[in-house]
Each structure stands twice: as structure tokens, then as C-alpha cells.
Length: 366
Image 1 (cartoon, rainbow, N blue to C red):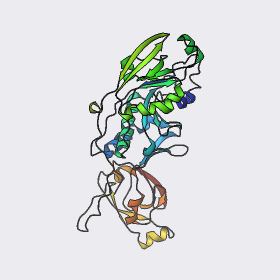
Image 2 (image 1 turned 90 degrees about the horizontal axis):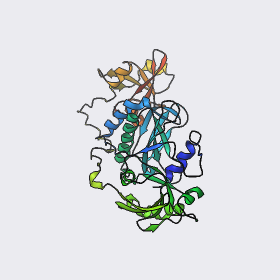
Image 3 (image 1 turned 180 degrees about the horizontal axis):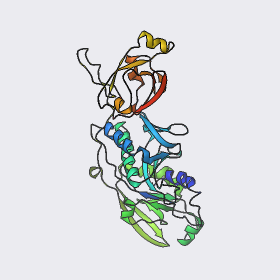
């Protein structure tokens, strides 16, 4: 019932859904309550993202890849700066349907990453892609040790207009008007409707909706362990009670223990051979190769694993890796520090030609 989504999304969609009345109008989007499906590992979540990447977009355009760490998720986009979601301040995620949105992007995710700032929006070409991305983001946050709040009232409340007060027989500003109720959420099950004017919650009067949302609601939100809400509402002037029951934690999914960022494995003993997960092994530059680079650093592909990521991408034995993710490759042993979890971009020299390869294995290490 917080207002974070109301102001930001209403402003973003105002061009498509202008307010036509003095009453609080329904927004031009529908909010759906979604219970995420946790992936067992980060590798599974990354693989799921790869399957739907072409169906996901941001304000910066198509998503070309992502970089993931314990601290943040950063999307690489076709245009503009990378779009980042820091897990420390990522607290809420909504699934929206926007029927009048342009093109195929009728679905969206809204990620709350600060209390008063605008949410991050991610568009999707289908509900299936949006729900899968929903679970991917939820799994990333859980793996980072910052799981999102699953229990949710499933409604948003705004200040009443003079017409809302008149319809409900009130002469002085009071209460909060329901802007939307999420489909499948606790408020919808309880019978709460758009336009209902809330007078009190659990015996606490909503004399001023803005002050109530900022000062009182945080003390009784589901994150504080409250599982039921007794509302006193006015519906077109008729006084009635509404009881909203929040699902208990025992009925909601928990992230598996395998879904986590793990520390890098210890270096294997010299007698052990660790097969490369990117599908190649490297050697140092020979004198002729070093001369061809005019003193620049690099590493040469010595072997390719049959059917591996590098071979499938078209890389060849003898290719000289000169850059990884935009950073120079000092040598074979230093490549590991340049790799990111997910997609990695390599700049390669082959017979005087500069080529670019993008590898996106489940785990970007070698």
C-alpha cells in the first residue's frame, strides 16, 4: 500500500493515460501478484535469462548482456549508460500489464531501488517472458543475500480528491483512496476495490493519507510481521469493514541453499587439470606474434574444447586475445580477473583482422 509505484509510474504513463476526471481514476496499467519460482543456482538463472533476452528491453534499448556481482546487477544495453540495480536497496518488484503501451511491449517489471526515487522499468514482449524475468531478478537478489519481501498487501493508496470526498459524504479531507488492487493479491481476495476510501487500518485512523503512508504504515507493513489488516472503508458513502489476510511465511517458497554467490575455488594443484569452461586454453605470445602486436599484450588460443563455448562462437586455435570486456589482456594467467559472470566480449586478432566474439556460458570462468 505504499505510494512508491504510484507517482513514478503515473508520471511515466501520463502521455498514454491522461486523467479525465476529478476523481481518482484507475491507472492505465494492471498490477499482478506473482509468486516467484526460485532457480536452484545462479547458473540456472543466467541460462533462463539467456533464453528470454531478446524479449526483454529497457529504457536504453535492447539488452545485449548483463554483469552480475554480489553487489549489483548491471544490464548492458544497445544505447545509453548501463542500467544497474543495487541489491542493497532493491526491495520490491511489480509485474504490470500496460495494454496501450506502444509496440509489443505490453508487459513490464517495476523494481523499487530507493524509497523516493523512480523505480527501474524493464519491458517484456510477453507475459511469459515477464514472469520468467521476474523469477530471474528474484533469484539474483536472494543469491546476493538480499531476498525481496514476498508478503504484500497488493494495493496502492493515494490522497482523495474533492470529488472522492463528496461521493463519500465527507466535508473535510480524510482517508486514502485505493488507486489499484493487484490481480490475485491479498486485497483482491478480501474484496477491496479501486475507489474505496480507507478510513482506518487496524484501528489506526488515516486522517491524512500522505502522513499515514510515510509515518504509520512502515510500522505495520508485512515486513514487520503483521499478517492481517482490519480496514474501515467508505464505498460510495457506505461504511463497511474489510479484512485482508497476508499469506504466512510457511506457505511461501524459500530460496534453495544452492542459490548463492560462492567464493572463488582454490587454485588446483599443479598435478590437477581443470578443463576450461569457456572451452579454450591459452599460451603466451611467441616472438613473431609479439612483434605483430607492436609491443601490445595478449594471449594465444592453444586448444579448443570440442563443442565448447569458444568453438561454437567461431574462435580458432591461433587467435590472439587482445582484450576482454574492453580491458587489455596482459597474458594467459591474467585473463581470469577480467571475466564477468554471464556474457564476456573478446577482441581477437586473426591474420591481421580484428574480430569480436561474445561468449555467454552459464558460468563465465576458464
